[in-house]
Image (tube, rainbow over all chains, first blue to last red; front, side, top):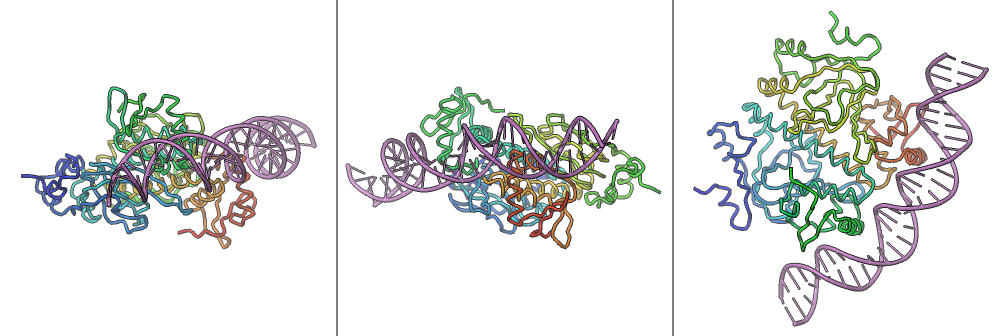
Length: 234
Length: 234
DNA sequence: TACACATTGTAGCCGCTGCTACAGAGTGTT
DNA sequence: AACACTCTGTAGCAGCGGCTACAATGTGTA
């Protein structure tokens, strides 16, 4: 029998092979719980450009991404947009729902057509109380997110745009890239404007920095594919 | 009977009134567990300038700060130092121990004489498994840390140093400040160099920015005390 | 194919900030 | 009181990067 997700997704979304039951966070659950959870989870199909939640919305839901890609971004007081992260199938978005404050500090917008499973806060809290191991897993996930953000803070503090851009590209490659004989390949298109949002730099400066990186041999551009030759996936 | 912490601390450290038993994270524990935990916890007195752990050390311990102030900082590849956070009595440091990676991504150095209680990773994992509520509390703490880091990323992306500095000061004031009739007061001394590490800016630029903020009336300098007149503590 | 639109590339100007250097103020110690 | 040291303030120069403007190329659609 086909998974419920597959039925909803249709043909145009390439689904993550990770279904709720087999997701690492839920590994310690009983089959009965998985079934219940799987039933409760609110599946939702979203098209490119749609948002799961917006900065400032009341944060009471968390999403497991089944397929597609979602960007997390933040609009600063002065109106500039900053992209914080790109999440892919198998990742979560909306982990801020656990925080006391109760508002999403960022917006989650689909970069492609996506399928998500939503969970409410109370659902998750109950789950954690009944299955402490799930809690531990979440603690680890959050911990890793903290490390990555700490890294991010470090990146942004680096003055020079060329280095900053390269760090961002390395991170994206590690998260989303594929190993090839030439190096790590970033498969999906990132415009210079996107990279500007990711690095917090002007679009034109990105073009300049890209040129410099190309000339330094740190990146290779092959059509739409961006290759980092010196990088190895962990 | 005096608390064990007080005996160790001696007179020169102003202790947090929060002892293990009454700390919010442990509220759901039985008295017996608290006693056991309190016994196991490794108390340590450190003097100003000493470090609890250094960036790159194997991360297997987490500390509850009983008294004093600890800075978290990170040295970037190019050698510049960046201060990420200042933690005070009642806060934790070393929450990265939960992450898979197993290395502290930052250093924790005492800004004053401090007293801490250390917990090992296995101790904590067991605690979470036996007391899921503790797990939930930790999840909330981590979540908040994520929000604050997200904010931090936003701050650093702001180009202009004056705004960046003001945001940093607001954050410090919210965390460590005291409400007074004139506004929120930051009690302990922060040199321009410290602020440079916090904002990721040059020392001289901080002096410039401070001058501008003073002239704009956004901050007031009264001897060593820094006052943010327009701010209210949440 | 033709057209509209998004994306990338180039150039020039200007302001912010990093950097160095030095002077003055504040603090603590012998 | 004298000294050493840290911290703050000021000045000037140079360079990076933000900004605008425009051209060139790529991409999708009627």
